[in-house]
Image (tube, rainbow, N blue to C red; front, side, top):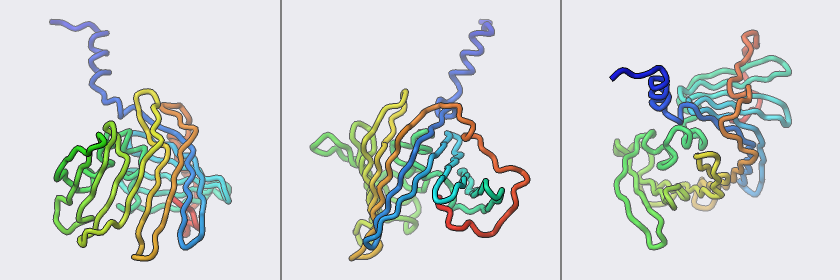
Length: 236
């Protein structure tokens, strides 16, 4: 059977993954409480399903950070036209929340990307589902990870050490639908730094736009930017 040009075009469009075309922009506020002190960092992020992430910080100084899944990291200061660049696996933005949902890894929050395999699944009495993950390579990473889902959306994540104690836990809430994309707009994390101390981090997202055309999604550091060795306190 011979296909018309229109039929061929439709087949091509259908074969392209929806996630490959998606991108999200949002205001982000991160409050961190540690040792009785609270710090607040605000930025606007531009995340593409390809894994490229641009963040714009306005205060106290304006600067941009650009990261990708390959671990390439740049900090650009527009006032002085300076750039700090480094490549390191730790700088990969594969753990960025919006990237995980855009790339189809929101259901397990990227655990399958980080070398963990599903060990067991159990339905709880309240209708939630608890999944337990373990490292594919024993001794590498957390000893066990528990992920709880409600209506197929992750709402709780906990990392355990070899002794069975929780070393960190995260709560995801305030899910909202944007087109056919569900995103959590509130994330609260607790990191246990010692038996008596912990770090509490709350992240709020607002003014979310999906599949917009803002030019900052494709922001590039100017070719004539002067390389520097000190990022001067810039935060990712």
